[in-house]
Length: 71
Image (cartoon, rainbow, N blue to C red; front, side):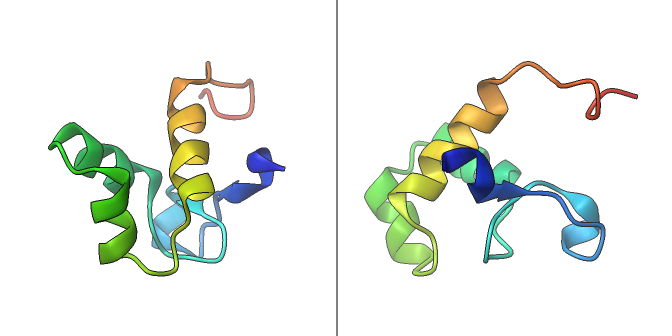
């Protein structure tokens, strides 16, 4: 289920991985967490985002690149 939460579409944010149903990039979530924001602060700033979306972004970032992601 969570694998379906991260999508890449060339028509959305130039193909950057985003949380499905939003224009919230995985990169933005990671930047906010690295800056010390909590899940609650991120969720408050982005009402369409869910805790599952944040967790999916973390799993996506931690996963080794697949053959389709490498160039």
